[in-house]
Image (cartoon, rainbow, N blue to C red):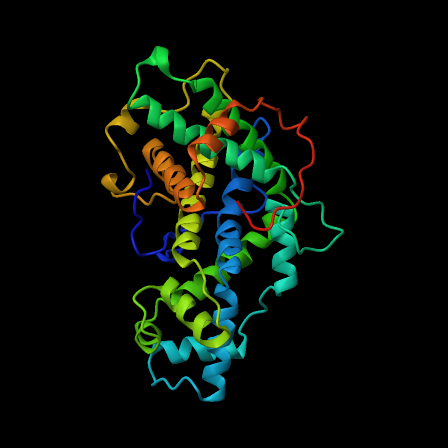
Length: 327
């Protein structure tokens, strides 16, 4: 069911609008009901960073800087050396690992953050429910007559609304202000990992392979880099789709949230010369959900179980145990 992503990571196809977070002070203009799209957009770089953190991406960058400073990573006078020197020099104050973990806990309920942070305990359940419902809805749409389908458009709408409300609430405050720092740090790290010099030095063809090879050689770690890459890219698209569809998500329950023609005709943002992390189509959402489910090993029986779970509003969801990793 999963479709291959391009090798180039979505966050690293950098331009200044890659994660268009929005200007501070404009939140009231951007709000529709209880879903503040700017808060969801702010969580795009935070989500990508959480996956990069889990894959030891930031640790690898720090290790590369240490190797460069110690003379064990000889590079010429080209751009890669300049980037490593700038990183070593510290031209701006980066977030510490503890600070990043605090934001991950607040935004997505990840463990390891400050105990005083009110963590998002509901995120994982709401995320799993939404991506599972979208995946099943698309599969049934293209293979079953309407009377035989088990997932209704209303279920897609409600699960998406619940997730968007959750992200809107937890994307405010700490996560909102940290988003710009996360955006800069992720882009700086990925730009470095895209360096041809580094990829040649470590026998890699992609930034994620650089992470894998450095982690393996320096710490003996065997990381599932393909899984991390796809989760990071697909997650960013899913969050952006929710942000861009806030008006649709707040429609009455009878509304059809997904455009069937987009899905059946496989209309993508790329086919319209647009970036899917900024302007994802409904098919981009479906593809991202399928890819995310594919690499996380979610089985059909689990999908059915999550899809059949009772729909809970954002206000009545019970606290959930901490997850070992972000969804």
